[in-house]
Amino acid sequence: MSQLKPFLLFLLVLSSGFNLQIGKPYLTKWVITKGCSLKVEGSTNINKFSCVIANYCRPDTLTFYKNSITGPLKISGCLQLDVQDFDCHNLVMTADLRKTLKAKDFPKLIIRFISLNRYPDFNNQSDVKGIVTIELAGTAKLFEVDYRVIPDGAKSLTLIGIRKVKFSDFNIVPPRKIGGLIQTNNDLNVEFNLRLKVLD
Image 1 (tube, rainbow, N blue to C red):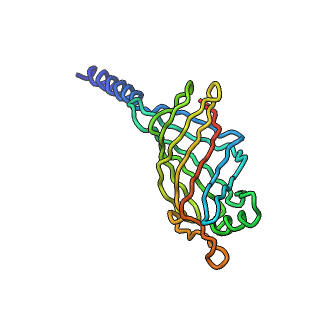
Image 2 (image 1 turned 60 degrees about the vertical axis):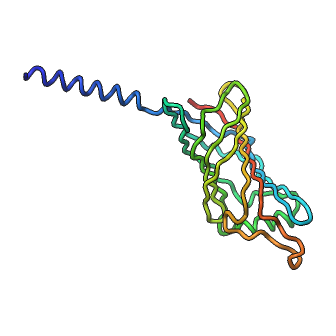
Image 3 (image 1 turned 90 degrees about the vertical axis):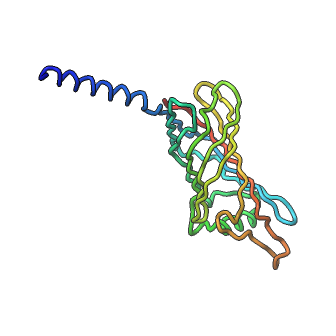
């Protein structure tokens, strides 16, 4: 019996290690490379506008945890964009947007990546869905985002995310001008382009 105990203990440790390897999530890291951008499009009762944060180039890393079972991929990582970098190609409009988004009090627009519904195909263009948290003007809100995946060569891709949001989602009142004659509509279209490269 005394010889049997060490053997049983060995089998238990071996079995535990084997099960741990089976259940261990597959880990992949993507680095965000140069050439990324964020675009916000909206409208007033008079015209449309488009404001861009261009050439975002911080080397942020997104980490994917992929289980062996088919299902959503958990992600950790985020973009932290400077609201002051928004350019609406019009000095007055640019200043108005920065003020509306409370750039002085909340200088960062933060997009936190939560999950994708499946791992992207690096060989063909495809569509995937994901969950993100967008934090703006001191308020964070969860959104589902539609992505277009465009392969750019070996282990590289462009991820284009599109989502409709509202000023009111972030407790922001759309700006008005000239005594209310010019009114900005509540709806906004947000598009972010990420250039990504797989590290491992």
